[in-house]
Amino acid sequence: MRVFITGGSGYIGRSTIEALIRHGGKVTALARSEHSARIVSGLGALPVAGALTDVDVLREVARQADGVIHLGVDYTEGTAEIDRAAARALQEGAGSRPYVHTGGVWVYGDTDGVVDEDAPLNPPRITAWRLENEQRVLARAATGGHPVVVMPGLVYGRSGGLVQLYFVEPGRTAGAVPCVGDGSNHWALVHVDDIAELFVLALNAPAGSVYAGVSGQNLPLADITRALGHAVGCPGRIDSLPLGEAVRRMGPIAEAFALDQQLTGARARRELGWTPTHLDALAELAQS
Image 1 (cartoon, one colour):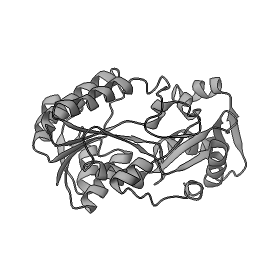
Image 2 (cartoon, helix red, strand yellow):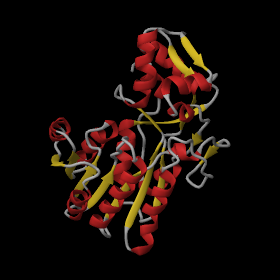
Image 3 (spheres, rainbow, N blue to C red):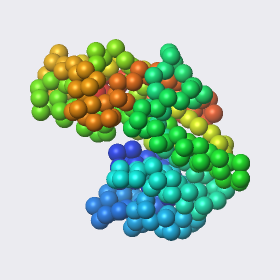
Image 4 (cartoon, rainbow, N blue to C red):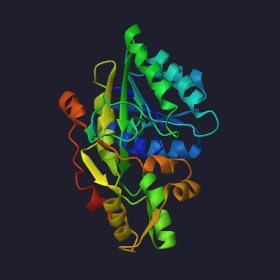
């Protein structure tokens, strides 16, 4: 299967390219710089020069693929508009072939216990822009398109991602791991290699499907930060931050870290045969 991927040089993208190739796929990856091109090439993908704003490139390369995975995000000004235009071009190119779009479980806001993909939506401001874009993506299922949305939980593993950037590295610098609030809220976790496998499986999902990419590990933030304390060499040293202070230090993403979320990935397991294998997040995070 020939797959075109955006965001291939990123944290989740690198694992996804590896998973695609492991499953026998031939991967073409968008690369906006020579550095990105070297990364995806080193993973076995064919780089195509371009950015998410190059909609003609996106449309044409998607037209030549058997399936598309859109992982890339442009965090400069106009993120929502750039993503909307890129998704439209990719879907136009893909036509009736599978198009897998990246969402995120943060759009559910705080959950009332363990919920699935049909839970009410109440996103923090940092991800509110995703709602309209995902609705537009899924609407194409009614007009001959083949959209699928994968919504990762909080992705960890391979010493990367948001956990590394906002908790591990500041913890090493300060000698104490930051914790937003008292740590009683839960994070819905998934390992980067497991979510990569779900993106590959989603290429075979029915049009219009939505999957929560969570492994069933809904852990209190307090337990997570304690594990990270061991990883950075300061066990037991936690810097508990009121939400206002966390926002001042981290920006609006702190509001997402403060969410109390518990979700199930049962739909992806049942419909796609997804089988996460990294199921001891605390042990792995303690070695970050």
